[in-house]
Length: 246
Ligand code: UDP
Image (cartoon, rainbow, N blue to C red):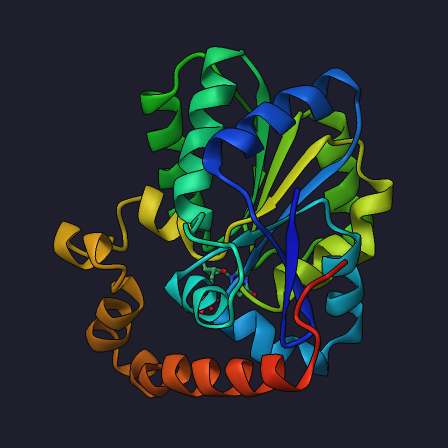
């Protein structure tokens, strides 16, 4: 698998099919596979969090989540041509888990959202097992969360606490978790639960989901400038550094 550096953060050149194939191999060998979404926000802000940068370097699959990452790769002579979004990947992993009767655990989001996420997953994927779920606003200690997850004997854990909490939680606790496949999934439960609508197809087709999200949520309006700023910074960084991760 080829990797590239974007402002010092590694991203892997992967496809959905590669990842699903790897999931099957890691599960067979009982090895830990960590799937982390690399997007403009994580690249620009992770410098404030050395624990997250270290965790990204140790992760097995750093997915190019978003058009910003793909554009930087293209504009700087890299080889990442397709994005792998955290949400679409989660949906494919659910389909894989359903076909192979795997056990999943959901950690994160508001209680009602989590409840509706579990309900919708059980309805759409009746052959997988939702072995447990904990909301992201609980008062439990890490130790208690870890023991619930371990007791569930889950194969796959989805963590939906948003950046930087989900990455920090995983970095801190992964060594104690007896799970094989880990994915950080941001706001994906909000969408699966039906509480948040995904962007219309036309926005998805032209890779403009980020624009739709910024325009439809006043709190995110400030993020509209993030992409052009990120592109400029990353291109300057790549001109100054050897971009390839040899
Ligand atoms: N979240 C959570 N616990 C927290 C903060 C956030 O479970 O303490 C959940 C939140 O409910 C949402 C997801 O994490 O389902 C993503 O959160 P947010 O929208 O803040 O992250 P962003 O999408 O902006 O990265």
